[in-house]
Image (cartoon, rainbow, N blue to C red; front, side):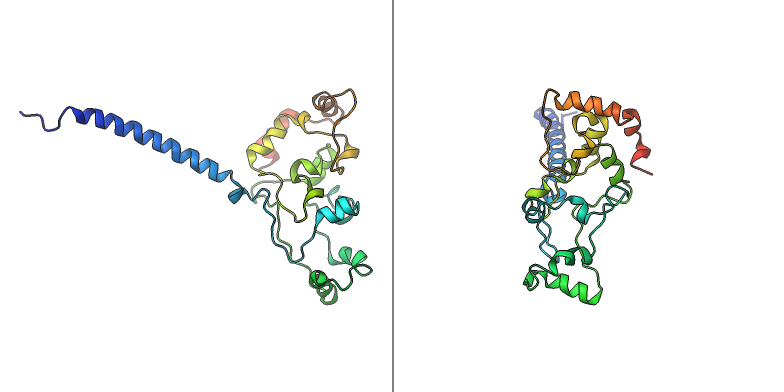
Length: 220
């Protein structure tokens, strides 16, 4: 019986299989790059808000501590969004006629809270507690980025599970003294390196590294 396909078809078939595998690899890599891109993660992308609040002006310029607005960060899972009353503590005295602050004045007059767009919003299946991180020496800047340099608030980190696990597996790389948690510009100094100090603080703050990588810590 005559051969239906020429022998060159064997080469073509092999090339097609190899090409298909390579194409799948390229598509997979492109999909992963897209998933990690700022377009998806929104890292570094400022969110439009009802009021263009500048952390750079308030934190770096005026020296206002994080806890002045985020009052529950040391005691609760949620750091807290400042009520209009907090804004009016100052803005009933300064910038009282500024057009950009009209929504604040209207909120104060009507009693309707301002609507803020959340910048760091974890999925519902992930549990995060601000207070335990503060109590164990994890600085605000570690997760939120250099907030004092943000004219408009943007996401500092992806907050992907892999990113969180980098710290949970090796907290000594990120931990700092508790009294420096809210210091945006703190850096290790003196004779101890970050790792040396971190290992000491992990012991001092009684951090169980094995427990940190248990799924139930974040997924409850």
